[in-house]
Length: 70
Image (cartoon, rainbow, N blue to C red; front, side):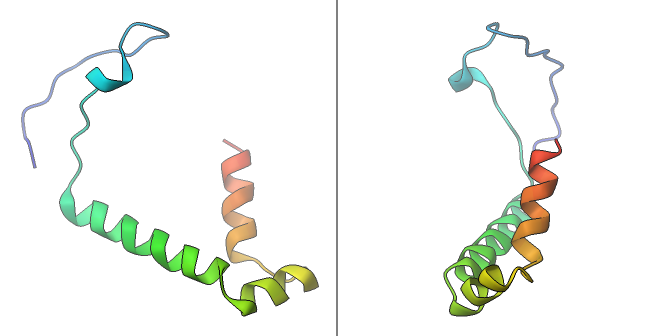
């Protein structure tokens, strides 16, 4: 992990996306990727489709509500 930090403010139109540098902890990134893959696999499963039709699906629905609430 890079301990050097820079204080840069990103405003509207001030910095191009390719110029922004983000330092992420590799362990945190691996955990996020693992969770993402697990959720994508769940969404492709028949169990998810059945729960979605019944209206009892809670995992993805909750995540979508949290995302819309931001």
